[in-house]
Length: 514
Image (cartoon, rainbow, N blue to C red; front, side, top):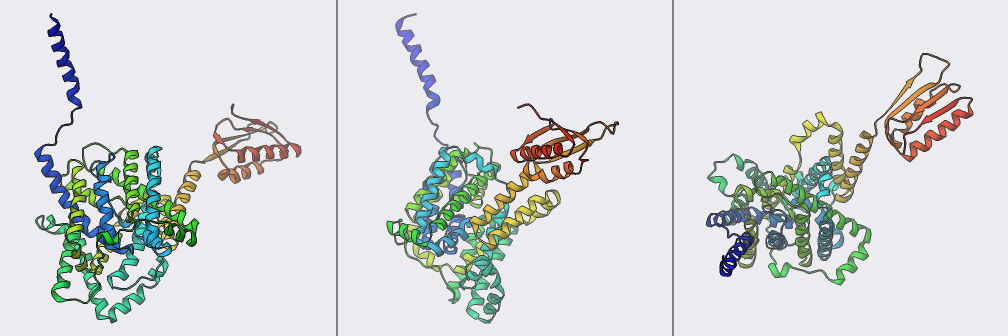
């Protein structure tokens, strides 16, 4: 074989090895599917972005900014290929509380800090650990958010201002109902919101040709048309313009946060970080079950969410999460690659830049109706019955978390739920059995076998059994079958043995080898 032949074979071998490294171009059918899906997601996201912003007490355009960043920034990054990010109803209550307490300027600081924390957690590979959070706590968190969201948005449906906190909003509902019934303008607005809720609830039962239009868009379009056609006297969305709404954080904002309370600010940042991360990663797990493509890399997805929130914070916009409603719409519309979610951000940007005045036509009551329906969907009513029958402790944690969120705030409520879940797990895993064998010879030693997990939670039971034994008998305390013996139990058992020895008894303790 000649040298030329050898070189030719070597070149062909190198070409064969290099070929797999070239990225294949998406086919025309894939591009068509992604473009179609992106339009569907855009139509679903548009009213939700605006509605979440209005309910959060910030300019409507900031909701669009978060949706745009969710598409153009988070959508391009690795993690989950088909789930879509943007402002979520689950953070509405928390953001509203933060804006009311610290001011709109502080929002960018909080979201930027939360984004940096998410980036750090992703880099430290902590994303997968969010899967260890109790489902009861997560569902309780969503139920609590749903209840607070409904209570607050019922006021917006009547063009009224909510009193503020969850308990105050709930307590004021009877007065709101009476006032709405007596005021024609409020009754008109409430009727628009109620029509929106009914449309959202019944949309899935309509013919498939009608359901091509997403329910939120259809509800907003119909109510907006009614307001324009009949010149109804209801509140509409205030429009500032995209550039006018963007407000990057400044040093003055940091000063106002410090004056308002550093502890509260830290709690807000932690709450945004944990809730946004948990909601995004739980959404990713749900979306993975909807398609047969590549699964989610949780750490990369957490970093993608962090990058998006960092950009949103720098622009003074709302925090983002992955949203299951938009993500499911993306999958069901036939999306095949991440191009669909990126393009949905492009359509949001074009809408915000070219026709921002269209937002000023939308009645606030209709957006409130969408969020009332979204809040209702957050309450796991169907799951509560089976959960109560099969895992009553988990059901109690769910309800306690929801009640704590309504009674206090988001951070404290979730923290209470997590503490209850940890306490329940500790109690259930610390089962201990105390078996007393008196033997056939009453004059012989009394054998006591302790097995299971001896923790401080079960210490009263162990001591009650030991202190009920005869004080003048020889006792052989067998701890060889214990799987765990914590310091509190070890110290208490040693003290009991010393006391028993002083009371004319004798104790022999059999300990497991260390």
